Amino acid sequence: MTVSGLQLQEYVAGLDYPVSREDLVRWGQENGASTEVLQMLRALPAEEFSSPAQLAEALSTLA
Image 1 (cartoon, helix red, strand yellow):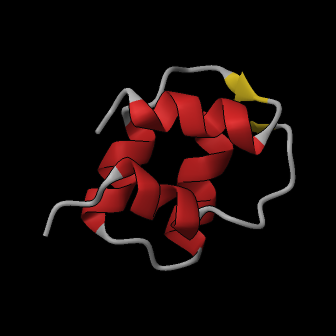
Image 2 (tube, rainbow, N blue to C red; image 1 turned 90 degrees about the horizontal axis):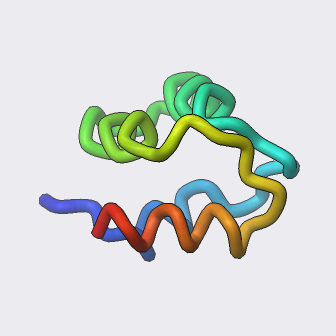
């Protein structure tokens, strides 16, 4: 199964912002994210996301 950017956005809903890529990966590991989801999170640019919209924009470039 391929994880779309939209599915990943739903998966990370409820996070407190700002959040970094490392925070997202750690959160995914602690919450049982699949290997595929973790790979997508690791593929995000190494920056801090200040809002869900900013994270959504970065995720959309991965889809």
